[in-house]
Length: 114
Image (cartoon, rainbow, N blue to C red; front, side):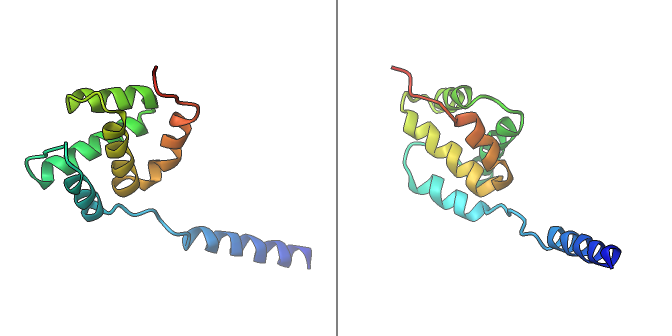
């Protein structure tokens, strides 16, 4: 009887893993959000998505949040933290949602430089 219960529990856990929701990318939402906000001026959708994917790659490579914000600000020639943070958040949320946890871990404890 214990074996049967253990087998059912194991099968149930395996089934739950199989049907667990997968985080899907939403390139259209990303494009709308980065084109509506002024300041990025991507020449086309491919350039915008390509840049967003580089952000995803940097997050996956565990670049620190501070370095990531500084890099985005440098790429867009701005000192505006919020301009950089907005693009980072849009890229991760819409293009690589599986990296949200990594981004949050990296940003934990981050404070704006004085």
